[in-house]
Length: 341
Image 1 (cartoon, rainbow, N blue to C red):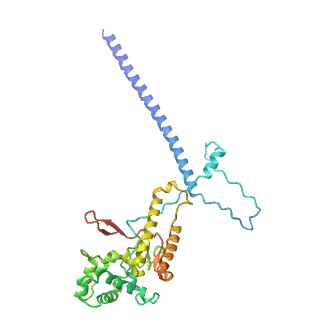
Image 2 (cartoon, rainbow, N blue to C red):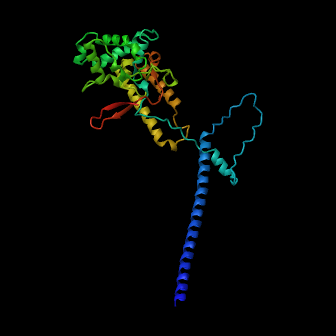
Image 3 (cartoon, one colour):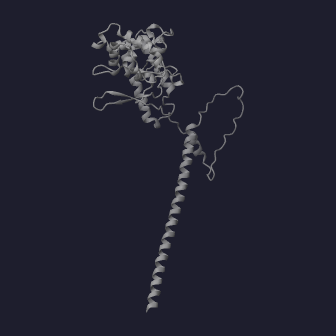
């Protein structure tokens, strides 16, 4: 009896082990097939991405010829082949070569406007004696007018006559202490050696209800890199109304400029939204935008009888590059808050 029971037990265990091995083998085969399918699909995806990048980066071919190459036969176009690829049909090749290119992204960051969308106060301290501007457009004169425009109706600004000149003179005396400044907030660390002027200057920098902070209108940039080569100019695409009118000194012309700029921003943002449905010829690149804005500026300014050639010297018409200040809207007050980066 016992030998029979042992035999039955042995056969049962053998059956269990055999079925387990079969399951394991089947599982491994399925996993291997899935892995091979993934590898093949991934290879095809990489090839498609490489072709897309090649198509996007391919230079535009012009029909212009020089005297040297007239009559010469064009060299055969090298074929691009991939190991294991099948030859493409002529229709597929033509479709690939004639596929439309989309406008490139403009990479706009509205939350970080260019530094020159604000007045560069560093020029007041470094170039206050340099006669490369007319007095009307000198950094010193513009800074003085900006203070008067912002604070002339504030009681604290009316207590001392010529207070703007006095504050600017004191700041110029401290210019050596500002040589390593990178942000206008650092102006608050300067001592004006006069308690009354110090309080007024502090109120201007801090701002209050109904009294804007002077820092909202300033940048402090002494660098000479390629992005700030025109760091004395105000960026027309981003600057606020106060700074634009500071230079133009014509309220109606400034309002018209802002309206024109608003329409241009609508086109730019719409293009960014539908860029992949447009051809490159239909879109605007940074150069075209700059040219269009500059021409529109000339036409509009001249229509008001103003000197467009002179005023153009003080504006930057490009889209610029992100600055070192982040603008965040306060959810409770709706006021834009500055944050240093």
